[in-house]
Image 1 (cartoon, helix red, strand yellow):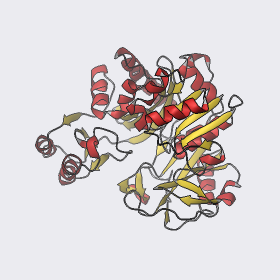
Image 2: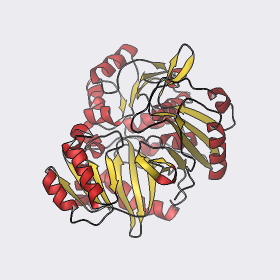
Image 3: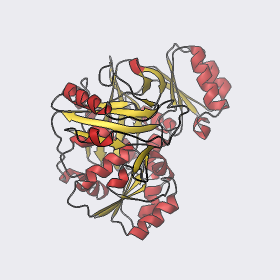
Image 4: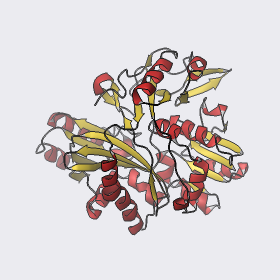
Amino acid sequence: MKILVVGGGGREHAIVKKLAESRKVESLYCAPGNGGISQLAECFPVKATDLEGQLALAKKLKVDMVVVAPDDPLCLGLVDLLEQNGIRAFGPRKNAAILEGSKVFSKQLMKQYGIPTAKYAVFDDMQAALEYVAQQPAPIVVKAEGLALGKGVIIAQTQQEAADAVHSMMQDKAFGDAGNRIVIEEFLTGTEVTVLAFTDGKTLVPMVSSKDHKRALDGDKGLNTGGMGTISPNPAYTDEIAQRCMAEIFLPTVEAMRAEGRTFKGCLYFGLMLTQDGPKVIEYNARFGDPETQVVLPRLESDLCEIFDAIIDERLAEIPVHWKPGAAACIVIASGGYPVKYQSGYPIEGLEQAEAMQDVTVYHAGTKLENGRFLTAGGRVLGVTATGETLEAALTQAYAAVEKIHFQDAHYRHDIGRTK
């Protein structure tokens, strides 16, 4: 098969690398890709959000499948456009990707179908939102309704911080049109868990659990980011909790979407909080998480191409999905200043030494290849992943690999997998 992967970050590198292992895959392409992906797939400078450009590229390359990995093109309807032109595509259609594209839609869906989540209120009037915030106990969660690169959620520790967040989103347009409507939620306490799941709209197969570390600095301090590191499995996610999630959250979500005429086919991301009252949904994503994918896919034993193929054909129930025992850990190395201002274009040293280590894979998130050298080209630059028999072994190996990699102003957390 000839496959085109849409996107250009660490998640896409992990998907491309796993697809490259399949005997079914003859040629791999990626658009726009990045420096690391270019070592496995032919890359083309077409933006993920350039729907017509992606369609034209898929036709030109005569691909058998397009894997749409990022949220923006999914929510814009790239899968729909490809299918309308007779091209097989992995990922939810636009009317199902709304599960991530609109936090208001997802909250209302959960309320209607009794799926456990935090109490909430929706506002498109700033004054009404400010008056509501003044009545709520802190901490308070303020979310931009639309897509905001994983950063449109502010956990305000005081009412004033929450009011500032409302102003920032609705008045200052910190997240553009994504903040025209906002959701204000109660703050849930407990342990966070991420579970990605394969689904063809009928069958749902959960992947191994993971834990993401969102804050920029050690001790879970600093600004929210797209993710500074991940571990798999999440130690808090027991078999008993997994069974509850399947019965109370996972299957009800797939069934609710089908009942709404929005059959979800692709990778469904469940961001969960394990509270005293049981597991609750914090958020849905309509695609593989980043950097969760970088610890989940290395543990997949089954053929990813076969799974994607089965999901498109709605025959996932026929495909066995197996996972390697043990654990995986990913440490994100970011540009200094991320997630705010940062400089790019710095040479990256030590990649070969890190990748030569046993059970280590370096996923490229924001890199470019120029004159045979890898340069930094984004906020999150690399995801250094190691697998091991135990989580501690994976973490030790991942951090040992991180220490071999250098570029100017490199920044990473030192406590991934070691904070509650």
